[in-house]
Image (cartoon, rainbow, N blue to C red; front, side, top):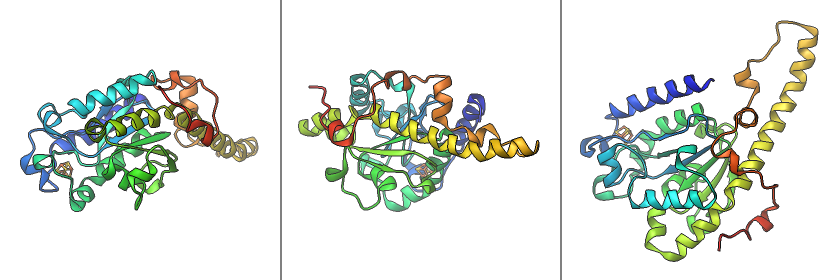
Length: 260
Ligand code: SF4
């Protein structure tokens, strides 16, 4: 899929979100918040739902929590424009209450389609409800800062999931804010390893195709299938990828990384 095709697909999803009334959250919203970011990114951040400011502006993470997210990204030399940011529910729950399971379920197809379009190498979950989508049954206090392979049924067909606290929770508790800086310090290394894994998988998949192509003209795979986002990123570095030159670190050493 080309950049223009991804842009068009994301805008199509956004238009559907803006017109959606599939759950009760449509009744109280001012503006739906589909999400925004670089259509070429390898990293998607998934929060829980829009708050007061997001509901007014129709953009994700523009309030105080968004300010912390920008600072967290800045601590590793990234900008929010280099990633894609969205939520598990696209409309504001009343009084900023937690989203209900049926609301998350109703909204899930939009997130799944966004993930299918973006095909990220890394999904960063922000908060319990986002984590619950990608790490069912986990507890945020135990798994923040850790990774798991994404279940392809989420729409992320070959991604690593990194769990983090929601920035709003980190703003309320200094210890969580400190841990959030430590968690995001792992992100560049996690992206590099995911990118390497995807490139290796693509190379392995290309071998039989190349052999097949040598025997018959008809068997040429499409670039969209054979070339993962990571391989594409090597040709056209993304905003996020520029900062990932550090060599892969073993998990235990990586956990020692800190910004302080
Ligand atoms: S939260 Fe999602 S499912 Fe519910 S109305 Fe908004 S866009 Fe539709």
